[in-house]
Length: 184
Length: 184
Image (cartoon, rainbow over all chains, first blue to last red; front, side):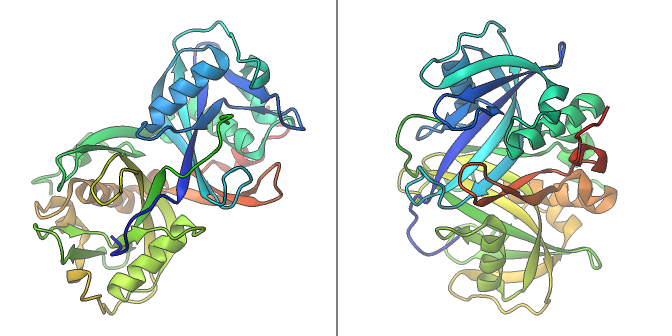
Protein backbone atom coordinates (compact mmCIF):
# COMPACT_ATOMS: atom_id res chain seq x y z
CA UNK A 1 0.00 0.00 0.00
CA UNK A 2 1.09 3.52 -0.80
CA UNK A 3 1.74 6.05 1.94
CA UNK A 4 -0.06 8.67 -0.11
CA UNK A 5 -3.67 9.51 0.69
CA UNK A 6 -6.09 7.63 -1.49
CA UNK A 7 -8.30 9.26 -4.05
CA UNK A 8 -10.55 7.93 -6.75
CA UNK A 9 -8.91 7.74 -10.15
CA UNK A 10 -11.18 5.33 -11.99
CA UNK A 11 -14.74 4.97 -13.02
CA UNK A 12 -15.93 1.40 -13.18
CA UNK A 13 -18.26 0.26 -15.93
CA UNK A 14 -19.87 -3.14 -16.17
CA UNK A 15 -21.37 -4.97 -19.14
CA UNK A 16 -23.67 -7.96 -18.82
CA UNK A 17 -23.35 -10.80 -21.33
CA UNK A 18 -26.70 -12.53 -20.76
CA UNK A 19 -26.39 -15.97 -22.30
CA UNK A 20 -29.10 -18.61 -22.49
CA UNK A 21 -27.41 -22.00 -22.64
CA UNK A 22 -30.60 -23.75 -23.75
CA UNK A 23 -31.10 -21.73 -26.93
CA UNK A 24 -27.49 -20.52 -27.42
CA UNK A 25 -28.86 -16.97 -27.66
CA UNK A 26 -27.15 -13.90 -26.28
CA UNK A 27 -28.73 -10.55 -25.43
CA UNK A 28 -27.35 -7.67 -27.50
CA UNK A 29 -28.24 -4.01 -28.06
CA UNK A 30 -27.40 -1.20 -30.43
CA UNK A 31 -26.84 2.21 -28.86
CA UNK A 32 -29.08 5.02 -30.07
CA UNK A 33 -26.47 7.75 -29.83
CA UNK A 34 -23.47 6.32 -31.66
CA UNK A 35 -22.63 6.81 -35.29
CA UNK A 36 -22.17 3.17 -36.16
CA UNK A 37 -24.85 0.68 -35.29
CA UNK A 38 -22.84 -2.06 -33.73
CA UNK A 39 -24.12 -4.86 -31.56
CA UNK A 40 -22.83 -4.85 -28.02
CA UNK A 41 -23.70 -5.96 -24.52
CA UNK A 42 -25.90 -3.78 -22.32
CA UNK A 43 -24.09 -2.12 -19.44
CA UNK A 44 -23.16 1.09 -17.70
CA UNK A 45 -21.38 2.72 -14.80
CA UNK A 46 -21.29 1.36 -11.28
CA UNK A 47 -22.96 3.49 -8.67
CA UNK A 48 -20.92 4.27 -5.56
CA UNK A 49 -20.81 1.24 -3.27
CA UNK A 50 -22.41 -1.07 -5.84
CA UNK A 51 -20.97 -4.53 -6.48
CA UNK A 52 -19.90 -5.45 -10.00
CA UNK A 53 -22.50 -8.18 -10.42
CA UNK A 54 -25.28 -5.94 -9.14
CA UNK A 55 -24.35 -3.22 -11.63
CA UNK A 56 -24.51 -5.73 -14.49
CA UNK A 57 -27.92 -7.05 -13.46
CA UNK A 58 -29.31 -3.53 -12.89
CA UNK A 59 -28.01 -2.10 -16.17
CA UNK A 60 -29.23 -5.08 -18.19
CA UNK A 61 -32.70 -4.68 -16.69
CA UNK A 62 -32.79 -0.89 -17.21
CA UNK A 63 -31.71 -1.15 -20.83
CA UNK A 64 -33.51 -4.29 -21.99
CA UNK A 65 -36.17 -5.27 -19.44
CA UNK A 66 -34.52 -8.68 -19.02
CA UNK A 67 -34.08 -10.07 -15.52
CA UNK A 68 -30.88 -11.98 -14.91
CA UNK A 69 -28.51 -13.27 -12.29
CA UNK A 70 -24.74 -13.06 -11.92
CA UNK A 71 -22.68 -16.12 -12.89
CA UNK A 72 -19.07 -15.03 -13.32
CA UNK A 73 -16.64 -12.36 -14.35
CA UNK A 74 -15.21 -12.90 -17.84
CA UNK A 75 -12.94 -10.05 -18.77
CA UNK A 76 -11.52 -6.71 -17.68
CA UNK A 77 -10.55 -3.75 -19.78
CA UNK A 78 -8.47 -0.81 -18.69
CA UNK A 79 -8.47 2.36 -20.76
CA UNK A 80 -7.12 5.82 -20.10
CA UNK A 81 -8.46 9.22 -21.10
CA UNK A 82 -11.55 7.93 -22.85
CA UNK A 83 -13.97 10.61 -23.98
CA UNK A 84 -16.74 11.08 -21.45
CA UNK A 85 -14.52 9.88 -18.62
CA UNK A 86 -13.50 13.43 -17.69
CA UNK A 87 -9.80 12.64 -17.76
CA UNK A 88 -10.24 9.66 -15.47
CA UNK A 89 -9.23 6.14 -16.30
CA UNK A 90 -11.83 3.58 -17.03
CA UNK A 91 -12.09 0.03 -15.75
CA UNK A 92 -14.65 -1.97 -17.67
CA UNK A 93 -15.69 -5.42 -16.49
CA UNK A 94 -17.69 -7.95 -18.49
CA UNK A 95 -19.84 -10.41 -16.54
CA UNK A 96 -21.60 -13.57 -17.61
CA UNK A 97 -25.25 -13.52 -16.56
CA UNK A 98 -28.00 -16.10 -16.79
CA UNK A 99 -31.40 -14.89 -17.95
CA UNK A 100 -34.39 -15.23 -15.60
CA UNK A 101 -36.83 -13.69 -18.08
CA UNK A 102 -36.92 -13.56 -21.87
CA UNK A 103 -39.35 -10.89 -23.05
CA UNK A 104 -37.45 -7.84 -24.23
CA UNK A 105 -38.77 -4.39 -23.32
CA UNK A 106 -35.88 -2.12 -24.16
CA UNK A 107 -35.17 1.49 -23.19
CA UNK A 108 -35.98 3.72 -26.17
CA UNK A 109 -33.74 6.49 -24.85
CA UNK A 110 -30.62 4.36 -24.84
CA UNK A 111 -31.17 1.65 -27.42
CA UNK A 112 -32.02 1.60 -31.08
CA UNK A 113 -32.42 -2.18 -31.20
CA UNK A 114 -32.29 -5.07 -28.79
CA UNK A 115 -32.50 -8.77 -29.54
CA UNK A 116 -31.58 -12.32 -28.65
CA UNK A 117 -28.90 -13.24 -31.17
CA UNK A 118 -27.38 -16.64 -31.84
CA UNK A 119 -23.97 -16.62 -30.11
CA UNK A 120 -22.10 -17.92 -33.14
CA UNK A 121 -23.60 -15.17 -35.30
CA UNK A 122 -22.34 -12.58 -32.83
CA UNK A 123 -18.89 -14.19 -32.79
CA UNK A 124 -18.72 -13.91 -36.59
CA UNK A 125 -20.43 -10.64 -37.42
CA UNK A 126 -18.51 -7.54 -38.47
CA UNK A 127 -21.24 -5.32 -36.99
CA UNK A 128 -19.84 -5.33 -33.51
CA UNK A 129 -17.01 -3.92 -31.41
CA UNK A 130 -13.68 -5.74 -31.04
CA UNK A 131 -14.33 -6.36 -27.35
CA UNK A 132 -17.83 -7.74 -27.94
CA UNK A 133 -16.55 -10.02 -30.67
CA UNK A 134 -13.77 -11.28 -28.44
CA UNK A 135 -16.10 -11.97 -25.53
CA UNK A 136 -18.56 -13.71 -27.88
CA UNK A 137 -15.79 -16.11 -28.92
CA UNK A 138 -14.82 -16.60 -25.30
CA UNK A 139 -18.44 -17.51 -24.50
CA UNK A 140 -18.63 -19.87 -27.46
CA UNK A 141 -15.50 -21.61 -26.19
CA UNK A 142 -17.04 -21.84 -22.72
CA UNK A 143 -20.35 -23.10 -24.06
CA UNK A 144 -18.61 -25.89 -25.98
CA UNK A 145 -15.83 -26.84 -23.55
CA UNK A 146 -17.31 -25.85 -20.19
CA UNK A 147 -17.67 -22.47 -18.53
CA UNK A 148 -15.04 -23.43 -15.96
CA UNK A 149 -12.57 -22.78 -18.82
CA UNK A 150 -13.44 -19.07 -18.94
CA UNK A 151 -15.18 -18.08 -15.69
CA UNK A 152 -13.71 -16.13 -12.82
CA UNK A 153 -15.97 -17.14 -9.98
CA UNK A 154 -16.76 -14.96 -7.00
CA UNK A 155 -16.19 -15.66 -3.36
CA UNK A 156 -16.62 -13.53 -0.26
CA UNK A 157 -13.64 -13.43 2.09
CA UNK A 158 -13.10 -11.53 5.33
CA UNK A 159 -10.89 -8.45 5.35
CA UNK A 160 -8.22 -8.70 8.00
CA UNK A 161 -8.12 -5.25 9.53
CA UNK A 162 -11.65 -3.99 9.10
CA UNK A 163 -13.99 -6.86 9.84
CA UNK A 164 -15.63 -6.18 6.48
CA UNK A 165 -16.02 -8.68 3.67
CA UNK A 166 -14.80 -8.29 0.15
CA UNK A 167 -15.56 -10.09 -3.08
CA UNK A 168 -12.70 -11.87 -4.76
CA UNK A 169 -12.79 -13.12 -8.36
CA UNK A 170 -10.40 -15.66 -9.89
CA UNK A 171 -10.34 -18.96 -11.73
CA UNK A 172 -12.04 -21.55 -9.56
CA UNK A 173 -9.62 -23.70 -7.60
CA UNK A 174 -9.88 -27.50 -7.49
CA UNK A 175 -11.33 -28.64 -4.15
CA UNK A 176 -8.03 -29.90 -2.75
CA UNK A 177 -6.48 -26.47 -3.26
CA UNK A 178 -9.28 -24.63 -1.47
CA UNK A 179 -8.46 -26.07 1.92
CA UNK A 180 -4.76 -26.71 1.80
CA UNK A 181 -3.84 -26.79 5.46
CA UNK A 182 -1.89 -29.99 5.95
CA UNK A 183 -1.83 -30.77 2.24
CA UNK A 184 1.35 -32.53 1.13
CA UNK B 1 -23.27 3.32 -21.11
CA UNK B 2 -25.14 5.52 -18.69
CA UNK B 3 -26.51 8.90 -19.76
CA UNK B 4 -25.22 10.38 -16.52
CA UNK B 5 -21.91 12.24 -16.55
CA UNK B 6 -19.00 10.06 -15.50
CA UNK B 7 -17.06 10.59 -12.34
CA UNK B 8 -14.40 8.57 -10.60
CA UNK B 9 -15.76 6.30 -7.89
CA UNK B 10 -12.90 3.84 -7.42
CA UNK B 11 -9.30 3.78 -6.51
CA UNK B 12 -7.37 0.99 -8.14
CA UNK B 13 -4.68 -0.87 -6.25
CA UNK B 14 -2.39 -3.49 -7.70
CA UNK B 15 -0.36 -6.20 -6.01
CA UNK B 16 2.50 -8.04 -7.68
CA UNK B 17 2.95 -11.76 -7.02
CA UNK B 18 6.54 -12.18 -8.19
CA UNK B 19 7.07 -15.90 -8.67
CA UNK B 20 10.28 -17.61 -9.71
CA UNK B 21 9.39 -20.88 -11.42
CA UNK B 22 12.94 -22.21 -11.18
CA UNK B 23 13.18 -22.06 -7.40
CA UNK B 24 9.43 -22.09 -6.56
CA UNK B 25 10.03 -18.96 -4.46
CA UNK B 26 7.62 -16.07 -4.15
CA UNK B 27 8.40 -12.51 -3.05
CA UNK B 28 6.56 -11.47 0.12
CA UNK B 29 6.68 -8.54 2.52
CA UNK B 30 5.42 -7.60 5.94
CA UNK B 31 4.04 -4.08 6.32
CA UNK B 32 5.70 -1.89 8.92
CA UNK B 33 2.56 -0.06 9.97
CA UNK B 34 0.04 -2.81 10.63
CA UNK B 35 -0.66 -4.43 13.94
CA UNK B 36 -0.27 -8.00 12.79
CA UNK B 37 2.82 -9.05 10.91
CA UNK B 38 1.34 -10.97 8.04
CA UNK B 39 3.08 -11.93 4.83
CA UNK B 40 1.59 -10.36 1.74
CA UNK B 41 2.47 -9.30 -1.79
CA UNK B 42 4.01 -5.89 -2.40
CA UNK B 43 1.72 -3.42 -4.13
CA UNK B 44 0.03 -0.06 -4.04
CA UNK B 45 -2.23 2.43 -5.77
CA UNK B 46 -2.23 3.08 -9.49
CA UNK B 47 -1.24 6.55 -10.52
CA UNK B 48 -3.57 8.37 -12.91
CA UNK B 49 -3.17 6.99 -16.42
CA UNK B 50 -0.98 4.10 -15.34
CA UNK B 51 -1.60 0.59 -16.64
CA UNK B 52 -2.23 -2.23 -14.16
CA UNK B 53 0.91 -4.14 -15.05
CA UNK B 54 3.07 -1.03 -14.84
CA UNK B 55 1.73 -0.26 -11.37
CA UNK B 56 2.58 -3.77 -10.20
CA UNK B 57 6.14 -3.62 -11.56
CA UNK B 58 6.71 -0.11 -10.15
CA UNK B 59 5.34 -0.88 -6.68
CA UNK B 60 7.28 -4.13 -6.42
CA UNK B 61 10.49 -2.29 -7.29
CA UNK B 62 9.81 0.61 -4.90
CA UNK B 63 9.04 -1.71 -1.99
CA UNK B 64 11.51 -4.52 -2.52
CA UNK B 65 14.17 -3.44 -5.04
CA UNK B 66 13.27 -6.42 -7.23
CA UNK B 67 12.92 -5.86 -10.98
CA UNK B 68 10.16 -7.84 -12.67
CA UNK B 69 7.96 -8.06 -15.72
CA UNK B 70 4.22 -8.51 -16.14
CA UNK B 71 2.93 -11.98 -17.02
CA UNK B 72 -0.80 -12.06 -16.30
CA UNK B 73 -3.69 -10.91 -14.20
CA UNK B 74 -4.76 -13.45 -11.58
CA UNK B 75 -7.52 -12.03 -9.44
CA UNK B 76 -9.68 -9.01 -8.73
CA UNK B 77 -11.12 -7.83 -5.46
CA UNK B 78 -13.85 -5.27 -5.02
CA UNK B 79 -14.39 -3.71 -1.62
CA UNK B 80 -16.49 -0.78 -0.49
CA UNK B 81 -15.85 1.80 2.20
CA UNK B 82 -12.47 0.50 3.23
CA UNK B 83 -10.59 2.66 5.74
CA UNK B 84 -8.16 4.97 3.99
CA UNK B 85 -10.23 4.94 0.82
CA UNK B 86 -12.08 8.15 1.76
CA UNK B 87 -15.50 6.64 1.17
CA UNK B 88 -14.55 5.45 -2.27
CA UNK B 89 -14.73 1.87 -3.44
CA UNK B 90 -11.59 -0.06 -3.97
CA UNK B 91 -10.66 -2.31 -6.89
CA UNK B 92 -7.63 -4.40 -6.12
CA UNK B 93 -5.96 -6.42 -8.85
CA UNK B 94 -3.34 -9.14 -8.32
CA UNK B 95 -0.85 -9.72 -11.12
CA UNK B 96 1.61 -12.52 -11.72
CA UNK B 97 5.08 -11.15 -12.38
CA UNK B 98 8.34 -12.84 -13.35
CA UNK B 99 11.48 -11.69 -11.53
CA UNK B 100 14.32 -10.13 -13.54
CA UNK B 101 16.53 -9.61 -10.48
CA UNK B 102 16.80 -11.43 -7.18
CA UNK B 103 18.70 -9.30 -4.64
CA UNK B 104 16.25 -7.78 -2.17
CA UNK B 105 16.74 -4.16 -1.10
CA UNK B 106 13.50 -3.32 0.61
CA UNK B 107 11.99 0.03 1.59
CA UNK B 108 12.48 0.51 5.33
CA UNK B 109 9.62 3.01 5.49
CA UNK B 110 7.04 0.59 4.21
CA UNK B 111 8.30 -2.87 5.06
CA UNK B 112 9.37 -4.61 8.22
CA UNK B 113 10.54 -7.73 6.39
CA UNK B 114 10.89 -8.92 2.82
CA UNK B 115 11.95 -12.33 1.60
CA UNK B 116 11.74 -15.02 -1.04
CA UNK B 117 9.47 -17.67 0.48
CA UNK B 118 8.74 -21.16 -0.80
CA UNK B 119 5.32 -20.97 -2.45
CA UNK B 120 3.95 -24.02 -0.65
CA UNK B 121 4.97 -22.52 2.70
CA UNK B 122 3.03 -19.36 1.85
CA UNK B 123 0.02 -21.42 0.78
CA UNK B 124 0.01 -23.17 4.16
CA UNK B 125 1.04 -20.53 6.66
CA UNK B 126 -1.42 -18.89 9.04
CA UNK B 127 0.67 -15.70 9.07
CA UNK B 128 -0.90 -14.21 5.99
CA UNK B 129 -4.09 -12.56 4.76
CA UNK B 130 -6.96 -14.60 3.31
CA UNK B 131 -6.43 -13.09 -0.13
CA UNK B 132 -2.67 -13.78 -0.12
CA UNK B 133 -3.27 -17.36 0.96
CA UNK B 134 -5.85 -17.85 -1.76
CA UNK B 135 -3.60 -16.44 -4.46
CA UNK B 136 -0.69 -18.57 -3.20
CA UNK B 137 -2.84 -21.68 -3.71
CA UNK B 138 -3.89 -20.43 -7.12
CA UNK B 139 -0.22 -20.01 -8.05
CA UNK B 140 0.64 -23.44 -6.73
CA UNK B 141 -2.12 -24.91 -8.87
CA UNK B 142 -0.76 -22.98 -11.88
CA UNK B 143 2.83 -24.02 -11.19
CA UNK B 144 1.82 -27.69 -11.09
CA UNK B 145 -0.84 -27.81 -13.81
CA UNK B 146 0.20 -24.96 -16.08
CA UNK B 147 -0.28 -21.22 -15.76
CA UNK B 148 -2.80 -21.26 -18.59
CA UNK B 149 -5.16 -22.71 -15.97
CA UNK B 150 -5.10 -19.52 -13.90
CA UNK B 151 -3.82 -16.65 -16.07
CA UNK B 152 -5.83 -13.86 -17.60
CA UNK B 153 -3.59 -12.78 -20.43
CA UNK B 154 -3.45 -9.26 -21.79
CA UNK B 155 -4.08 -8.08 -25.30
CA UNK B 156 -4.30 -4.63 -26.84
CA UNK B 157 -7.35 -3.97 -28.97
CA UNK B 158 -8.49 -0.84 -30.81
CA UNK B 159 -11.29 1.25 -29.36
CA UNK B 160 -14.00 1.84 -31.93
CA UNK B 161 -14.94 5.47 -31.46
CA UNK B 162 -11.72 7.07 -30.24
CA UNK B 163 -8.88 5.54 -32.21
CA UNK B 164 -7.20 4.74 -28.89
CA UNK B 165 -6.14 1.29 -27.75
CA UNK B 166 -7.19 -0.45 -24.62
CA UNK B 167 -5.89 -3.43 -22.71
CA UNK B 168 -8.19 -6.40 -22.37
CA UNK B 169 -7.63 -9.27 -19.93
CA UNK B 170 -9.33 -12.68 -20.06
CA UNK B 171 -8.56 -16.39 -20.20
CA UNK B 172 -6.50 -17.05 -23.28
CA UNK B 173 -8.52 -18.35 -26.22
CA UNK B 174 -7.47 -21.39 -28.23
CA UNK B 175 -6.00 -20.32 -31.60
CA UNK B 176 -9.03 -21.34 -33.64
CA UNK B 177 -11.24 -19.09 -31.55
CA UNK B 178 -9.01 -16.05 -31.96
CA UNK B 179 -9.71 -15.68 -35.65
CA UNK B 180 -13.19 -17.05 -36.07
CA UNK B 181 -14.28 -15.45 -39.31
CA UNK B 182 -15.52 -18.25 -41.49
CA UNK B 183 -15.19 -20.85 -38.72
CA UNK B 184 -17.84 -23.57 -38.88
